[in-house]
Image: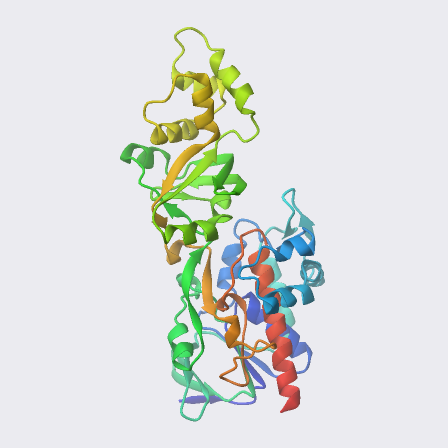
Length: 405
């Protein structure tokens, strides 16, 4: 057994929340050690940057805060104290210029996570932060030391405080598998069961449609469920449907599915007026097929036209009825795609289990942050912003705790 000495605070989890907390605490003079079960830090952070690292969003803070659920005041206060503008300043302080895209999303100019992570790690190294990879947290031993399983056997440490940043339960191969829930629940911490968020949904497609169009995008559509409507892109998958416009509704759709199958409608031409679309569909050449009418008159892609046939195998020939179907194509969802395919998760440590400093009420000196807390938000920069903000809030709580010991 190996004992690791001389640690003020052990941070367990090397994702964005843990790294951000480590930066604050080490800058304040604390002796910080980060432990992670993966071989390298920031694995999920790097994955998030593969399509362009969406750090945060530029919308007004009051509107920004509405994206978080549940609307727990501690979470909202954390984001207020570490707002999007602060994350931009931090990123640029690491030599990574940011810009705002047409959607309002904020990205580093390099559009990658790796340059930012390299600069970040260099700063942490310069501030004396020690990193212990391949250290899988096993809880506490009888002497209340934090214990880890490593390739070389069991390692222990007795920090003055511990900060947990272990992530949620999505993308388990990148380190976030939710395996910590039994450890904390067994210690008396209230843990809300995990559920997929920003996820796709299953649909009983016909074999032809699934084989022919899996991986095909539905560009610039409007997805509606109840009173909520989101315009963006979606993607047909073999098992169902996913993509940004679907993810934005995932919380509501997931909760509705608890009561049975759910029907959404998709406006395949959100920029077209119904009446004008009906006129264009009516003005067709004699003998023109419906397929040509949909392509030439309605401007539908092959996947959109086939989606109409999934909803109504015998397409209406009446122009007004056909326009109505295009403007509200029904799709029945039968379930979620599951935690392993979700971008993020709802559930985790209940905020009622924390005090105002993000410390576990039943475990003094142990703090928690990031996706392991019970909150969710849509994609668009809100997820990373929430991780940074709660990481900083927990770090400040731990710093205050240390100063009082």
